[in-house]
Amino acid sequence: MDYLSKIDLTRTPEHIAIIMDGNGRWAKKQGHMRLYGHNFGVESVRETLKAAKELKVKYLTLYAFSTENWNRPKEEVDGLMDLLVKSLANEVKELSDSGVRLLAIGDIAGLPDACQNELQESIDLTKDNSEITMVLALNYSSRWEIVNAVKRIASEAKNETLDVNAIDATLFSSYLTTNQIPDPELLIRTSGEYRISNFLLWQVAYAEFHFTEVLWPDFKREDLFKAVLDYQSRERRFGMVSEQLT
Ligand code: IPE
Ligand code: IPE
Ligand code: MG
Image (cartoon, rainbow, N blue to C red; front, side):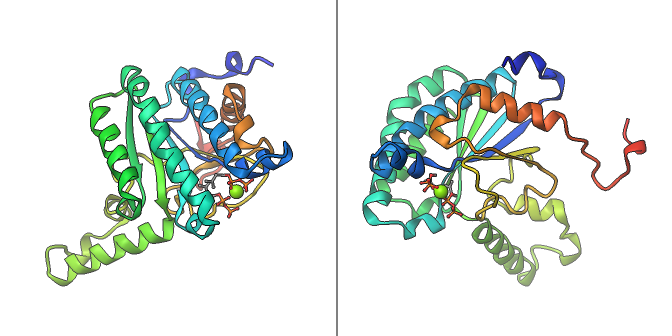
């Protein structure tokens, strides 16, 4: 099916966020170790990024490692960190040449040094690109991010550099790691799981959710287009009634 031709390119989301799930099950289905699935997941990232660019999406946020993922077997965690370093090293030239700006959200200081260094180098190298921003959520947890914001706001209020009456949703958003990034209009989760798993809790307040049974390593260009078509079929009312929308 040719999904792209059905998409209204004037109404594509500015920001798509994806919970890339199902790598382990994908690998297991073919009798391989879980890491085999993570490796193939990198190809899906490449394809999805390209497809997002075709749609003129400005931000693509990918949930790559949650704070809860540290609880996985050490071998898998080490493999994932290794894969992150290698993939960044392999891809950064192409990212940089193709107009991609890289950002990271999450507790980056809690990542192994090698990851932090590779990440920082890639972020620096691509900082002037503007075609699309790819945001990697690494060692990310929404509750961590929200608690962190509250701590900073409380301490500024306490030492009177911040007026309590100035605290509103906009100000609160500016204390989150996503402060330079608009809220996603579309959140995709692969692998048939129907949960948020501590991802962008504040930011998805009015996002449309698209769930697919497709496992992340099988997620390709057409799957992104299908999700965007689904998004375009929704009526986004923001609390109003249909008749009020133009
Ligand atoms: C998503 O795939 C990747 C990460 C969480 C790093 P999973 O590894 O969660 O794969 P499943 O859900 O076990 O199949
Ligand atoms: C969410 O997937 C985290 C990432 C995709 C990085 P998980 O596979 O860790 O989520 P749960 O544990 O099934 O909720
Ligand atoms: Mg999973």
